[in-house]
Image (cartoon, rainbow over all chains, first blue to last red):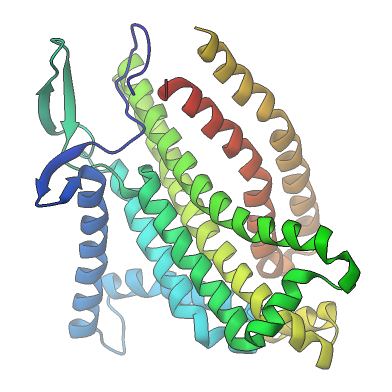
Length: 271
Length: 72
């Protein structure tokens, strides 16, 4: 699992184990995930206790992303947007905080030095940003997958969902059904791989730049990481929202307005 | 050695298509914004989603390259 040859940087694609609690091995990406959740919980706790009608500066800092994202969900989510706005928001905030943890000093650089049996040494950091571990992103993608499939089942029933998987002319089912099933499952892969690939590549990029030019230059890439972390969190949340809308929407458009007119009406109502 | 070469080729060739696609998407979005600045809210979500889907292909190439380098 080590990079081959005389490598400049030491990056592992899997999370490093820190210690074990009985059968559970605690890895450093778990610490990152718990840390991100704690940050969100602390913000929520502070907000519930201290929120006032006239927002202070810190309060509007917390309110801003919530209002902004719920505005997006409201304008493009159809009339059931209240059902999944909290889910989309939770995904966005958790991934955003988990991504931005990687820029904090000490994350990925403070840790235990592990001496391998062949004499080489390796740094095992205490905290690894959670999204740089495929287990975290795949877990989130599974949650998103279960959510949009259960929305489809709730709205259309099992028969309706199977009919959608089967495709329109029934005699084409042997051809279309595998394609539809694979395209549903590929969402799982693409959601998790996109987030993991971006954040892990960012980590490798930062480590390489720190090894090449230790001064000034890494700061530029940290700024880039801020943007990428935000965009990837937004993309994960918005794609989950789109999958839910697709799962919910198909039948309702038949009775109501055709799709483009509905979208125009929704966009017009937002302004 | 061969796998390092393969990893470089994978991400290098795999980034061509998404690069072209992203360029087209961004240029069209900017054009739309220039023509109709009030539509920025309506353009934003489809724009981000389209960019994410185009970028996914590059991410697949990146994951392939990472697997070639790190998993022996």
